[in-house]
Length: 421
Image (cartoon, rainbow, N blue to C red; front, top):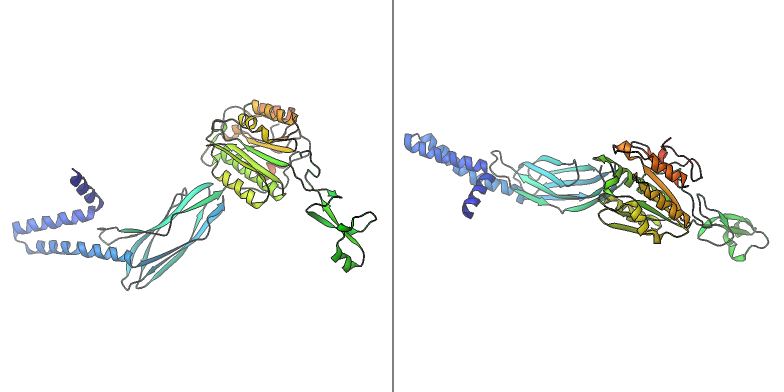
């Protein structure tokens, strides 16, 4: 039974070869029956051509060198993965009809081309893969398939390695973003001058009686001929937490136009804003599992947050209210919490108010899920937030984030662009 299955599989794999052999057999039988000599010669040509074509197609792959250069492995949405492919023939025998396929798991991308190489010929081209959807994908290996004019055999060979590429979510610049500051010296939109020595150097001024000698800038003093002292600024030092709601029950939309994608992009943009301002920011979410990125500063922290957001999926069963309550021990008096959610449940605004009563500064970015097709309205949730003094942004479908997340004032209940009226 196994031998029969193997034979059937072999016939299915090489259909044209099977048909050619069947034709040769028919020619021989009819030739014996009729004595027509041309049928015998046709059968001999078919039997002779099959092994010749087999060896030729194999030789086209054995004497082939392929170089695959992957120039980018990590990009943001909207950018492209760049690379270059070079094929070289190491023999004087021409290679015709080589099908080159760059295998990839990136959605809506398929790179296939047909190449013909002359004697010791070279073919090279660059590729650009548009990264339209965030996530982790695989590219490679490069598959080269040789074919003959009759389609008898299609041997294939893989070149290069399978590599993993990461597409980060789009992080927009938010020049006018604002949330209420926590209660720390120097906290706020701008740094403030201080008489204490800090790592933040602000400039120079003339020496005044009472200034400490360790603040004198001696090189500038030598150049100007008068005593000059250094000025310092306080550094905003409170932690900012972004709580991203990945409960699948509250998200809406289809394809790439979903509240999930909008919420992830908003979280990435907020992270970019605070990292640029040299603030300590952390991220928490509960999708497939609980993900906590502890607050930190710098580009490495931004990269860690983007990596978390790249694979974030609205597949969780934990509400944003439960997440805030479970992780509330992380929020002290000198902490700011920003919630990003499309939830229309009226309980999570009460949780934010409870945190605010403990001295935690709170803010919310409310996505109006009804503009993505969800039933219900977010007006009640927005009303509860503003009535409770929670600084709130609202974002509709197709809103420009730079405008929707632009604060119009520094009072907790001020209305921002995109807010329901």
